[in-house]
Length: 177
Image (cartoon, rainbow, N blue to C red):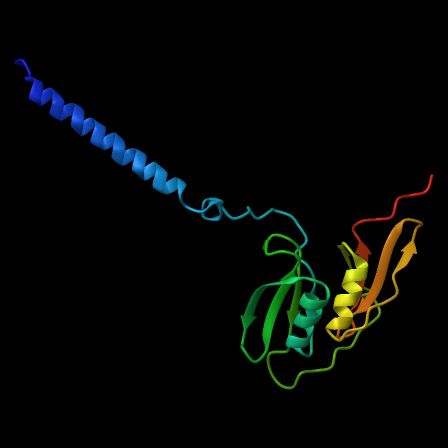
């Protein structure tokens, strides 16, 4: 190995700086990606409640009840455009429990019949007065807000197909000592 001249050393040093600059630029570019794009989707829990599947006679009307009235979001639509099935829930996390609104796929839509055995779906959410106002504004009935067990505020409502929904206020009133 011979002696290296000053120009050779300078070229190596300059090349090293250029590589470092490119690496730094690449890291900065990756850092510029929105945080939502960097965050992996939530892991599916191995055990949890998915939610009930309710037959509905008018998908659009039921979606309006659950979204405009109760404040849920449409998470997914699938099936035909004429008779879609829809999953609604609070928030867009697919691992959280939701309600599947399903329809008959073939033939005439059958009326919903309720048998003994299924009573209601219980849902916890804040601000029952606001929920009652939203339901009325969307053209649905709101039940009376009651205090049960001495400290829990709740309201019973019925969806367009007769399914009873128990709304429990997530902000209970303080217990009296």
